[in-house]
Length: 138
Image 1 (cartoon, helix red, strand yellow):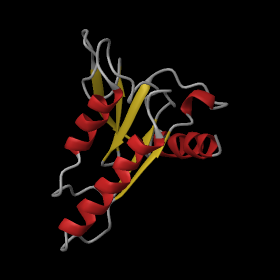
Image 2: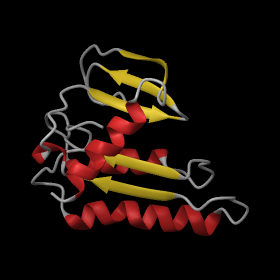
Image 3: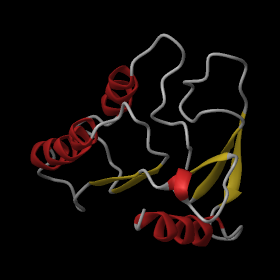
Image 4: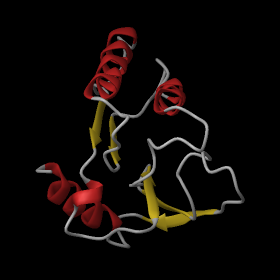
């Protein structure tokens, strides 16, 4: 959950940022539910976002022994959400992460991340699901 996840730093292009994220999603990936909740950006076209669908297909084709199919979803409705989310969060293997700047180390300045909270016990999973649903219609 990061409004600026697909927004490039100064003097960079959106497709460079998207390609960096796609590179993280390698064929041996064990994750089965990848959801990115971000804001829409004028330079991020539907065609660029479709690269995630292609990556999902490639992962599933190349991982024949995978127990669950990998599903990658991008929701760009965060900027229009009725719920204002300023900070950036990730839930990874049921663990809540909090970021002081853009997720993934894309922020060029000093940044901090903290982690270690149970995402279910803190209500983070329920909160994410609520925001995801509220943003889905945008």
